[in-house]
Amino acid sequence: MTKRRTVFAIVGLLIVAGMASYWYYTPTPAVPQGKAGFFRKKAGPGNSADPVPVLAIDARVADVPVYIDGVGTARALNTVTVRAQVEGKLMAVLFTEGQDVPKGFLLAKIDPTTYQAQYDQATAKKAQDEALLANAKLDLERYIRLAASNAVNKQQVDTTRSLVNQLEAQVRSDQAAADNTKAILAYTDIVAPIAGRTGLRLVDEGNIVRALDTTGIVMITQIKPVTVLFNLPQQDLPEINRGMAEGPLPIDAIGPDGKTVADKGKVMVVDNQIDQTTGTVKLKAEFPNDNLQLWPGQFVNVRLLIDTLRQVVVVPTAAVQRGPNGTFVYVVKEDKTVTVRPITITQQDDQKAVIANGLSAGEQVVTTGFGRLAENTVVVVTNAEEAGQIATGSGPERARGGRGGQKGGGEKGKRAPTTTGGTAGTAQ
Image 1 (cartoon, rainbow, N blue to C red):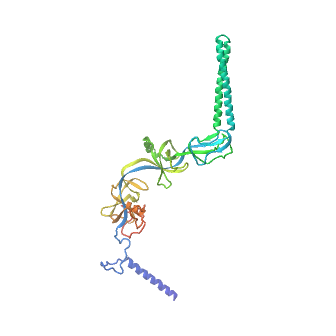
Image 2: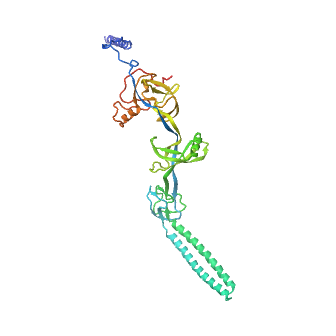
Image 3: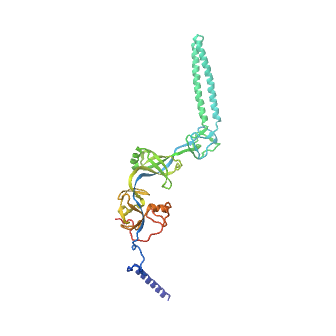
């Protein structure tokens, strides 16, 4: 009995499934207006003629900058490792790690006792020889007067004159020795050779430092302004040279998000040779770096402006579609239907595309809602800019059905009813 019931149940399910399929796929006779039949079939794909909601925007004429993108490395304009020039005990460290110091700032002090004594000795020796020189000059004057009356012989005068010359040379030698010891004494005060920011302290107070130490006391880097070194393909070199002939080319340093401009600078130098291993040429740009957006050693995305396209037709990149025969856009006609328009693109980035031909300024192109479009599809158009303002809350009111104008043709929010239409890429 159990097997028989199972067989009857399976047969019954198959009969019900067959009837349901027949009911769904068999055309239903037209029902007179106002008399909705009980078995009237619901609208499925291809049965509705409702307009397709889309976002659209007008093609515009604008000046479009032409950029060359690259990746570089930020480098300090000047870098100095501060080292001791004399040997001695480090008496004091007078800077703070990470401090911005001006040129000539006293960073540290070495024990000056020995060098002060040497300087004092040199100055004393000079004073001694100056006194001998003064006495020799007086003797020379006396001998000259006496020689005029033949009171002394001429040889005595010549000997005294030679002694004066020797003492004058000795005084000059003493002055040089005093200057040398004074310079050595000044080396006990370690000062900043450039203006910049100090790094980590490399030696502590109380240690013996020497002129031969390679570690140094601290490293100072000048990061205002800062330079960025980057490479570009050799194919771009002719355009770069043409731009540099008119003056330094403007360049932007792009922030970590890949969109915002962290700083604006200028290309200062193009290297005088191409790297044969990579086929690239090295460039050096300088940025003010007022807010310390760039840091030495940091990888930086740069954008070099080499030209500007004047008064060209521009559309959002989201409006450009690609099919078997190339790029095209959906143009909204006056009767609120769309037509497929082949276009030629001069250049394109993440936001906008420059149209060389196939489209005129003022024509309205679809930016979102391509999934159900085909030639002569009826559409309901919403301005893409107004939809974007409403969705972000910058317009007079927020859209209820979600945001429009999503890149790539996707729509968020309430889904529109299914209607007859083709898909993107049906252009012939």
